[in-house]
Length: 280
Image 1 (cartoon, rainbow, N blue to C red):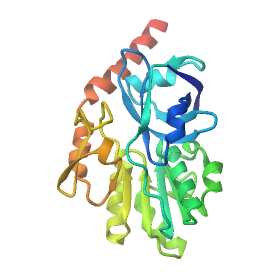
Image 2 (image 1 turned 90 degrees about the horizontal axis):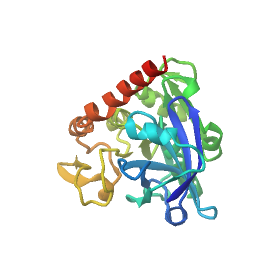
Image 3 (image 1 turned 120 degrees about the vertical axis):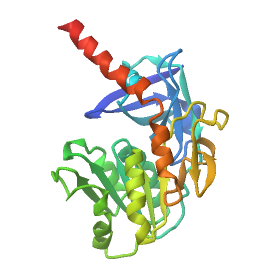
């Protein structure tokens, strides 16, 4: 069992969970993920890791509350224990001296891009961090990111902070850096990964995305997380999660992501309606 040390909603719909998992924390590297289970008979879900402390034996993740299982995780009380924290899983993000790297994060990816930016900075890269959200009140960990970035840029859909719009503004943001960008690393929802890759392709900048397909065991046995990259079938859990964003079959991935939407999202929403009705 793994004790939940912190459960805090840091912005609407995103919860920061810190869990006691010493064996996982000792071996964690940037870009890897864990599989969590909120209860004994619960679903196993993959979550990117946002930070860890090997000495304290803790692992921190950002959970975006979108379905039944993430809702259960978000509702857990501090101090209780959960049955499953499996990891580290997946391959670490490749960290070396690239030159200038743009780290792009959105929603839960704002958290998971942090250890990557930190590791890149430790390798003496120039790190430009771009974070995007619907509005400024959805940003978090800005001070942590500033400490590991040479510059931080904001994009908001409503224009309340930084550039107005979406990642389509990336070319002009890169131009404003007034220096070549050697690599782009993107963490966040599938739409952000796809859109960022589409925008960077004509710029000729190598783009690495952390894929987030449906997953069960996280060790390559179930095959649920298969994706097509460069016309080759890959398993995101053991071959990834990082892949060349310009080689991913995004249409296939987006379609596979919708497979259990009816079973996951609709019961989550209707159960909330029933709960509200009972309270009324």
